[in-house]
Each structure stands twice: as structure tokens, then as C-alpha cells.
Length: 277
Image (cartoon, rainbow, N blue to C red; front, side):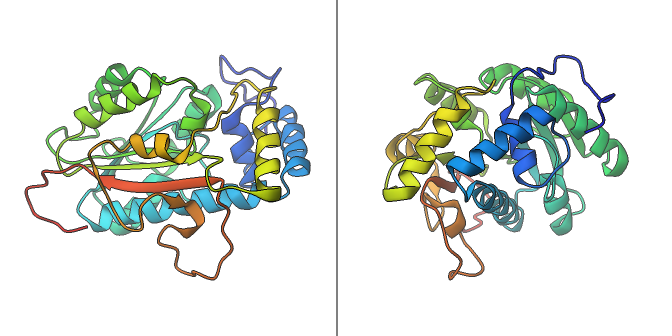
């Protein structure tokens, strides 16, 4: 990371989840404090980088599913630092009129997303805004103020590998607000860390990882599978449901999966075109 590239508001005293995730995926938008923290994570959970890649691959498959089923505009909450397999790139491979707005509260993530979009984005189709996903109405308003998204058409809302960094039971109300704002036929995509159905070494290791995040600027917390399932509300969960991210519509079912990160995709009822998921 270029030491001269230091967006306003960046905290270099403590590691940050967005930059740690970038490090785990092999990116360069991170600082020594993040890399040192990442190396400690590897000691606690040797498969942490594999888990990060599995989650990123889940994001790609979920975006493709949405695009293949008629939804070509995306609102990515907690999008993180741009890295391999960005949402607008994946969607653009399937639909050259796809739209995407990225949202994050980490200055590095926002700054790098802007640089990425300036280089290979289209201001009419891609945008990034700084914001806290807990402020649903504010985020929604600013996302549509960009002019990128059409409020009359379905939207794919993404909260991938971010909600476990948002503590508190009130998050359920926040996500419910987003569900109400989404037009009929929209998708909701999420992934989340959990202890449900996790046993043995994997359970002990993921517990140590969550404890380590207490030392960062973005502490993490577990939620059980039922609570995570509740984020989908009355949306129609598409097959195979809420499952380990490495098992969600995986091209190669022989690949090993970890149970500690689960994900799913659901659709809001009322899509008038009658597209089947």
C-alpha cells in the first residue's frame, strides 16, 4: 500500500475488517497493521484465507444467479475494498447494461472503489457512496440519488460477509426496512459467520478468530442459523437454501466446505414477469 495514499478518516492504529479481507484475498489495499493481524488469524485458523476465497466465490455465483434471473442492478452494502471479482465486473459479463452502487463506511474501501470505477467503470452505471448500512433510509436515498439505480425495477441487495461486524438485535429491524424498500422481484443475498452446526477444531478455531477481532476497529460476533435465516423475512429462499458458502450452487461438489460461514439468496414475492427461480 502506497504510504502516501491515506484517505481522510483512516485509522492505522487498529486493523480493519475491510482491509483484512483484502489481505486474505491477496489484495494490496492494506497496511502493516492489517497484515500483522492477518498473520495472527492464520495461526488461529489456518484456513482463513480459503474461507475468504470461498465467500468471494459465493458472491460471484449469487450475482450471476440474480443477473440470470432478470435482475441487473445491485446495491452492495459493506462492499469492502475492491478486489478480484467485483460485483459490477461479474454482472457486466452477463449484462452490459447492469448497474451497481457500492456502499461502505471504511474510507480506504470507498476511496479505492472510486479509483477503480474511474479507471474501468461507467458513471452512468456504477457508483460508490460512503455510508453506514444501519441507516437504511439514508443509504437507500443516497444510493438512488446517484441516478445509477432505477427505483421502478428490482434490485439485488447484497450483505456479504458484513453483518457479523454489525452487533445487536436491532439489526433485524434494519434489514427488515431494506426488505420493505426493495421493489417486488428483488433479490436479497447474504453470508454470515455462525457457530450453528460447527464442531471440533473448526468451532474452536472460528471462536479464536472472533476473539481476535475484538482487538480490531471492527469487532465480530456470531449469530445462530435461525437468526440469520430471519434476515430473509418472508422472501422466497432459492435452492439450496441457507448453506455453507462453499456449497451454494458450487460447480464442483467435491470441493471441501467449511460450516462456519453460511449464505443464501432469496427473492421478494410479486415479480410480475413470472420468472421462476
